[in-house]
Image 1 (cartoon, rainbow, N blue to C red):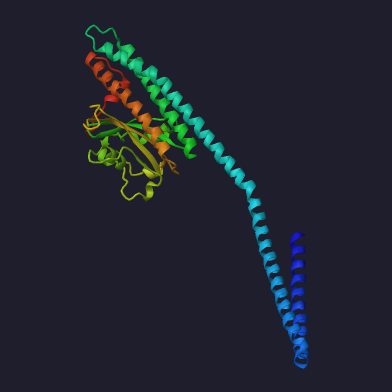
Image 2: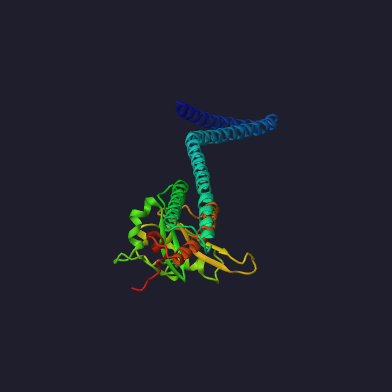
Length: 339
């Protein structure tokens, strides 16, 4: 209705302007004729022309202002119409940030809460196994292995659930062990294990072991000449140098983040004695890993894992020295890649 009224008023204004111009033009012509015959009207004609031109200018300015006003009103109405959608998008984004914050803090609490228990458990059994009169039994060692496995799987489940929220995509996380520049998958999160486990074993059913150099991310981080302490990419298909021993990796993911499980054992920043025990990895199809917060969260978890795996390595060696063995430790210690 308002648009119709504006159109009618606009047409009427235009018609009025045309009539005014025609009338003014006729009047000026008449004044010119009169002024030629009578000098008294000459000044009056000049004044009338000036007033006429001023009136026309004012009418034109008024019409232009009216046009600009209508344009601005229309733009304002369009912008006002977008506000509900923008408010909805903003509300969704805020709710997403709330979910991210809740998931992240919950995961951090879960990881660190159980970390205390498993760290003390490993520390105490390592101390006892080192004694010549150790009272630790093979059954107790098996229980420690089970507790360690439960904790690591819980940790990976928490990482995966948090990154599912952050990236708004289905993620998978895993821990790779490293020894003598060789790599193998040690743990996968419970949700992705069934879909990913086939790539962790050979056709003969043996644990798949390959070189660090066979994976671009691992090789980049492990290279002593590289300053990179992590690797992340949200579009691996368009990464010029990325390669992986699993040639069908792009059927499982197109984005990844990898952080090392390592520490400088010298305790001196100027003296590097890096001990690399493995990699903590997470991936998905759509990305969302290329930001500092994701990197810091995963790197902090990798730092915690170094302490645990450093102790667990010692525990594994001491149990072998005692002649103790179980399936978990045998798989953990398996590095025979001669095929």
